[in-house]
Length: 426
Ligand code: IMP
Image 1 (cartoon, rainbow, N blue to C red):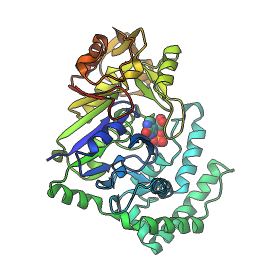
Image 2: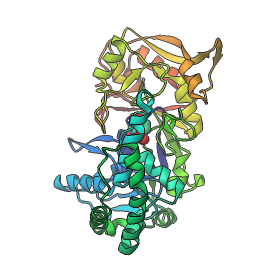
Image 3: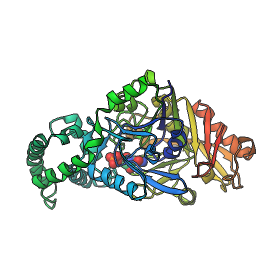
Image 4: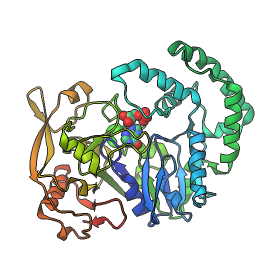
């Protein structure tokens, strides 16, 4: 059994794409199982930079089968655009891409509803990526207004469902936003039937396929999107995404049970970032925060928004690690912290005069959490060319050890730059 999972332990953007890319050649199948085109992965492959959103990182290697499993929500137009862009760069995509017939489909009304709901929340807006992710998952749970990828393959059924749903949603959308564009059910149906014809060869029962693949002894790699603290059940609710983005979502999102997974790798940045709204106890609103943003190029892959930056938060990441059940750590972007005089790591929160190492379940408590810091010496030299743990400055090693100790997990890998070679196995 050699199934591996790569899970973000913070608020997303932990550079999971690099780890998935590194591990891909040791696997036969790469699986995405939650989220949608709210995710963004930047991968440097063969000297070229690729930005992937819905497609698993495995698509860059034709010998690997890439699976978009049941728990993903799919905007077919966005998916086809991504496929076309890769084909234009000579990345072949044929039967090496499988899409679950159970995955739910994002429609134009999902984006329109999200825009109206977010606008109505004003300063309390979640700060979503506006991709219709939350509204699609809401309809999935509600069932009455949901359409799955498999439904796209039955034109009469699709025509009927789109007409019914659009008729029910249109007056609500008009009431929410009188300026919103009308829903043209006939046009939407035509567009989606066209998408369906192009995607038809890829749409299968991926759960059955994955179980057959496991039975054949194939090695599976599960690629988590977003991070544990954005998990709809376990994250900093309501400032979360709408999928199970911690390790908990792997099984429901893919149909592959826990006993099939041999290794869960937790990915953390050496500091913390977050995009969108919500409390962020270790956020740095000063020159150090800006320095980290500039050096780490902390701007969203999907929306281009500047990411909020702060010190490493061992309370938050430790909670993410426990919920996700990871058994080792990859510490990413360590090079970004070079040049700082001293570094801080949050080891506990003080909330209303009490210290705790538990991550608060209520957003009001998280908003009141004051970080308790351990200060560590910085290192002033460039570490991005070093290839051995022993060659790293003493202060860098002490920083890595502290992260591992606080999270009570072995550090398996350290990343000191975007390239594959800028990686140290600990
Ligand atoms: P949604 O997923 O578009 O509904 O956005 C909900 C929250 O999750 C917002 O704060 C987003 O910025 C955040 N989010 C969604 N996808 C990502 C991601 O891939 N990385 C980091 N944050 C994300």
